[in-house]
Image (cartoon, rainbow, N blue to C red; front, side, top):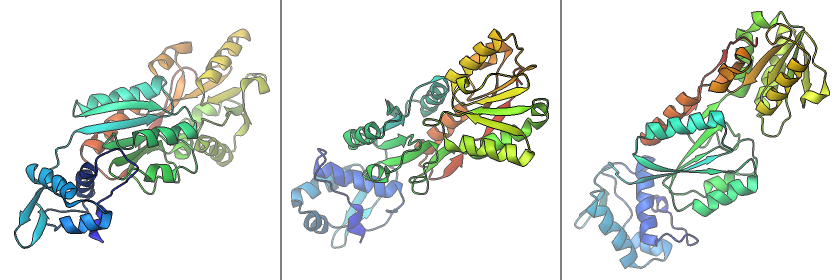
Length: 335
């Protein structure tokens, strides 16, 4: 039923006539209304949602003034233009801010080029905060960009966004990735392919060790590491923190967490081991600092600047795709 494309939510503070306007805009953006399509009548909307005719008429008059709809006497109202010029207000929900997420954020804002306002929020890997931030801001924004990390049980919270564009960022959350456009990292393939590209350098080491504390780190990193080691027949170990195992010559560490990276560098210096000769280090997520620490730390990293640029293009051009952002092994002296 085409009238169902009009969404009215009594729990929102947004005036009902504005909700009608937003619904029409959203249906046009999703190509559910095309130029020339007939839209529900004032009476239909009024009856379906128990609204006064004046409320619906106010919405229709504003849409007519914007050139979005036109009336044909005796026939009804039709979509006159799909060229929507509404102010873009973007709700950007990150898990946390760190050096590489800052690169992503700055690239996104730079490529938005002032064509929208961007407000950034953080959930700090807390599902309750994640849900509350969406609920509290559901009527304030036209676009919602969300880092859902590995949360489960969040589909209902996100689906409550009725009249805003939704984009999934960074992790391909299984509850959401099939429903919404996304730009994401394929963590399992990224680490598998990156380690494969550096296989010759890895052969001079005896044991590959991943420090994987879990929690914040995507499970795909662990799965890709195990798959690579088994496929290439490398001896490997998985530990949760650097204290679980004494560093030995011939070890190469794969370290997703920067706190653990600092610990390993300190311990290596205490033992007078040479990084890149006695032991190897591969960190996750590149930053300018890793170019200079220890004469250069090898990293597995997606291109965060490209991710921000692509995300801005998706938002500004209403691109409805799922895009896997590329990653690579950046080789420096630590390997």
